[in-house]
Image (cartoon, rainbow, N blue to C red):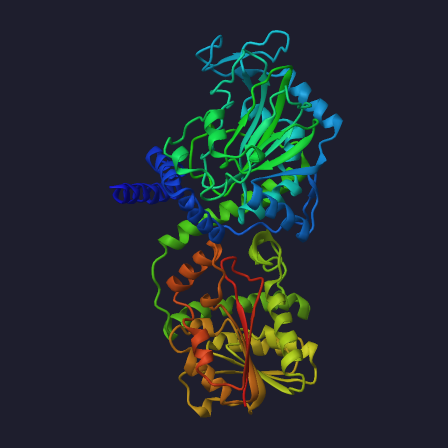
Length: 595
């Protein structure tokens, strides 16, 4: 029966995951299954889900990892992450400044807050709102501030956009972090006993698949002021005994903890104000009952997914911190892009790419380039058309989706030029197969004036534009029409060249790339270079998965890596390019050398 129950929970979890992705909310049955499977498997179920999140959402590329928690290089981040992996917490040497703590304490004594319902004696059975926290007239164990008020505070926003916190979070989560829960609360010396509703009994959190919390003390915390407590290592898989997990998502007494853990694993964080503690609260933790004074805590939670428990949504009414503003714009643009791309890609119909389809798709397109050529005053204008190819758009730039102007064609041409110089430094002639309107060859001829350049193109309108451009800018490059898969040898009108290349030309040949490459190699002395989208080499990320689906539905190049390895060449080199004109694409650069 336990196996059958786990299978039912897993099924509800999967169905809930689909609903979360499509509708943006988690069904309660799926959330309860997340908790149930965690308890039954000792955490292995959440570990597996976290691995999937890491594959789907690789970390952001931050400009730096500098901020309130420290100035971290790669080694420093590894040290912090190892500490979290092993112990479940890390206390940073850096602290918030006294001025910043003062401003946040002022916020917490002048803004409305909610007195939490109490499970103990003397407290209210229902939460209620007060105008502000009054330490001389304490009404409950815990006072909570609304997430809405917290995130609209300028100082809090500065922390929300802090690169050091984001860097630590994504290093530990191994994926893009989502800042999803903000909290600030007072713990008070109300009553003589700890209160379950105020989280003053040991418990584990399970609101998300995986997360990391940053607790920041805004007041000095000594042994009597309700220090935060944690059981070292209890966050690890198997770190909580099954006898405790069998109780489910419940509060645990100090006696139960003492029975199962040695005293040296019980950590009490007594520290001065401004102290920053990173902690995986999947481990057992609590806020100790306050005996004297009070304690003010700020919490930021970064998660690997919003799948899980419900939190009331909060909205930033006005972004007051410029660093946070930049991060929001960048990351929000990416989220919108992925949402639209996923919807469009999944709804897209299956195409069937053949010669007729390619001719129909590109002939009219190359005609349009005739208009661009007439407006180009210089060769540079022709190589990157003003008002068309220099405007912001979504690109893959250095492995991440970015909305910006980006010269993707220039990036490919420089990659090609570098490959020629590295692998074929003595080449004196080159032919491009599938040259379009011939711009790549004009670039090469200008960069390598002693190189004889020839271009073959399937579509006659492309050949006509290419010839006109060569004549207009007085660059000696020759062009001719050719179907380099089907045409006979008599149509290969140019002399044999030292090398040849393709650039997003083989992508149009989903089922005949082997014949195409063999034909090319039959007409060169040294070898060839190919810059093409090869889905076998795409990253195993959400972007890579969507790229593979899009590639297959458009019916682009298939099985090219296997084709290359079947040619038995003297040497083959593969380089995965980091940028692309299509944000879902990750092109590959192959260098093939003949014996």
